Length: 151
Image (cartoon, rainbow, N blue to C red; front, top):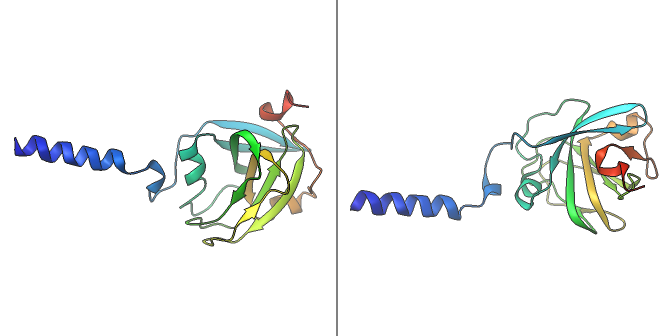
């Protein structure tokens, strides 16, 4: 009887611990190929609250043409911070038609808030400087499945 109670208590604790409390990078997210001019981006898609909360936390590095696309159900002013994020990133706040609303460079392991200048449903995080090195600024358009039917 004690073993069953102990097991039940342990399971209850595990179930009560939010997924986003993990201390390792999340894996096995869906992926989508995006286009930024002539450049292709392999983006992991974070579309649930738990996936968005973890984001790119705890990663030591990210390949050059990879990123993470955060997808929200409805447009809103989206704000991001870099808690437990080890690599410098640039966030592109993206409108439904794929146009970049604004870009923000973010420093690792800070709680500074970085927000979209208007309501958006998409945020694409890439290694810091990725957009600048390719001459991509606010107003540039991204292509790919999330944006193709929204123009």
